[in-house]
Length: 253
Image 1 (cartoon, one colour):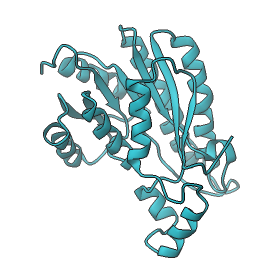
Image 2 (cartoon, rainbow, N blue to C red; image 1 turned 90 degrees about the horizontal axis):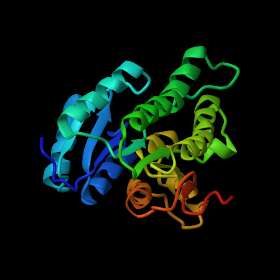
Image 3 (cartoon, helix red, strand yellow; image 1 turned 60 degrees about the vertical axis):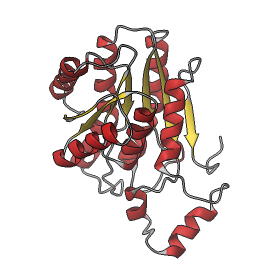
């Protein structure tokens, strides 16, 4: 594939999630070629790549399977991108997983699966990106969580991993400057499939209760998170090492 000379390439891990999809659409609309990373649902990933090309006018969009926890698979991912598109300019570390369990009952596997996907996956993908990137305007966007700061019951694995992402962001911002900017975007109550399932949002009373806690009086949309990511990538040229809440004012700090 031959991209226009001024086209840049964005890699999104966990790209079939609601926020991953919205981010892919926002960056495609901004003129980026998009690489969709996924683990399962190959046909769905290929179909979404076609939508990005034909409906969102991405210069190119491809889907590549890889487990972000595996160094070998991530290296193979970047090699396939290099062969197909030549480079990666933007990395969005969006891959994540929940395995809720009470602290006293949490198994080693429940801990390791969540921490390795979120924290180790972000480490490996970011390191492989930074080692390969040869330009001077690269971007890494990490996805955070409000519970990284406030905590929650039955989520010691998830909250710990997301908290570590905040510090990892600062470390990478210091070490990779000035060639690569690194920031975190932290969603609040975003109307995703995961939130709908967790809080039974098919029941109107549950949805209303969640909305009333938010100063802006609504749940966020995946596109709200994607717009912040797109801003940081395309316009936030003097921003690095920061954490941006996209939560309607729910958590002020």
